[in-house]
Image (cartoon, rainbow, N blue to C red; front, top):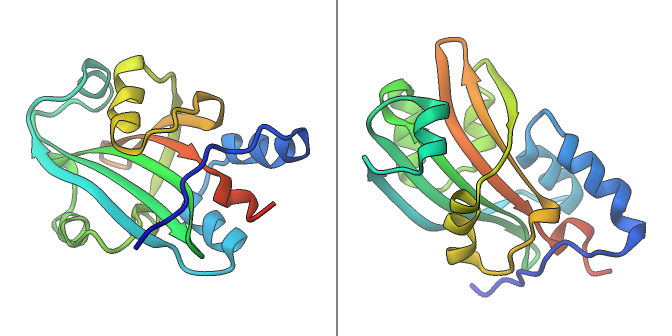
Length: 170
C-alpha cells in the first residue's frame, strides 16, 4: 500500500495543533484515531532485537537487549506519524512483547494496559537519523522524544514525528 508521507505543514494556522501534539501526555495513537476518525494502520518498517543502541537509549533505559522498531501510523492513505522506538526487553511483560512481534497493533493500544508515565527527553542527532534514514523528510520542528516509564522502571525510548496527515488534505 502506498501512503503519502509529507512533513507537518508550516502553515501558521496549524501551529495550535502542533503545539498541542508536542505537549500531549497521553496516547498519541488515540489522538491520531480521533483526528482521522478511523483506526490507525500500522506500517512496520523495521523490527529487530539488538544489543547495540545509541548511547542516549542505553543511558535512559538501562538494560542490555532492546527491540528496535520503526513504524508509521496512517489512515486514508496519509501518514499521521512516524515513530522510532526502543523497548527494553528485560523490562517488558511477555504479552506486550508478543503483541509487538506481531507488528499489527500500535504501541499506544498496548500501553493502555500498563500504568505508564511519559517523560520528555532531548533528542540527539543519532536518534533522529535512526528515524530519518527509514522515512526521509526530516522535520525536527514537528518531532519529539520521550521515554515511557512503568511502575517497575523505564520501558521504552520513543522519537516520533508528526506528519501532514494530522491536518488532513488541507
